[in-house]
Length: 280
Length: 214
Image (cartoon, rainbow over all chains, first blue to last red; front, side, top):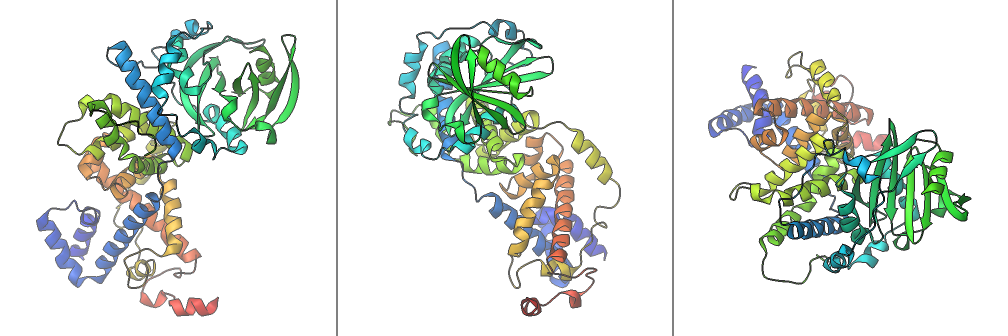
């Protein structure tokens, strides 16, 4: 029995190949004469093999490879441009940026240069587009709000310069205001995939209220009409079509303006995201 | 790979990037297990990959490259993709009492009936259940088991990746596997592979009898 206990103590290390030679010998001597311990080893091995094969049956999606290639290219471009160590701002300590970030920023001449760099990386666009579906679009648009991740960039100038050519439309932080919650602070931007196409999410908050605006190229996306209801609102004197509804538990308003797609999601209600969509 | 641009003179940064991308499937497989969500897994792999590319100077030539990448992936997951450490604290304290070997005892006959007869593989009906059970493990147990079983990292490499002593890694792997075995046993009973109170070989339902019963 004591030999069984010793073996059981060493069983994980034995199965994982972490046991030194003398102990391996000791365990194997015991396994020859103890069928119960042999069963333990066999079951542990079978489970280990099953976990491995169940887990490794997935391959990294092509869209992920594309996204990494794009980010890596923009990192390289940024390294060359700046010729200084890559920035690594802690997004918490960089929060004072938020005030400055609320100022609308135009996009400069950097776009053309970046566009050239990415010519090769975005080539398989049609291949990626083929797999886009409008159901997934809604989920993807609400995703960054439902599962927020730390922003990648806080500097509005860099956001405009680096993100815009990747997303394909101008990406810039805007002034966001709500009559009851006041002005929202810009807390950063991040690249993501929407229907397998690059998009950018911009996050804002006012107190404990959050708003996420996903900026995307509507030319590359399917129409969101199948799962959201269509509304026509008055936006500064002109009529605007907005698709509104709920996704992943949050209110979502999707619309297009001047060839740029916006998806506003928030823990506020549908009417409130609609009002923000009218203001933007 | 379709994305590769035209060949030019080897640039160390590009070469490094290719080396990283060669491990993308493995990183994604681990990320799927850690995050339990395909979309979040993509974000995690993306973030970890970009971190690795930026930190390429810190990689020590001659050391295990895949383990280095997985350490960055694990770190990124632990520091940025979890809701917090509360789950672990309550779980580990609740399970720290008692003898880890004595609890969750399963008879040899039961263990045998969970595998394919005369084979080293787990029964197919239990494989999906095992996958689910891995997903349900608390983060610290799941991370240790996934790094160990899926990517076959050494205990030392796992300890480095998780920032814990080797003893902690061993204990997490051991406890995690005990939980998995118990869940499999319950499922095997529910599926009729074995009977309750499985004390000896006579309790194993013969395969032929189960087929006849259908």
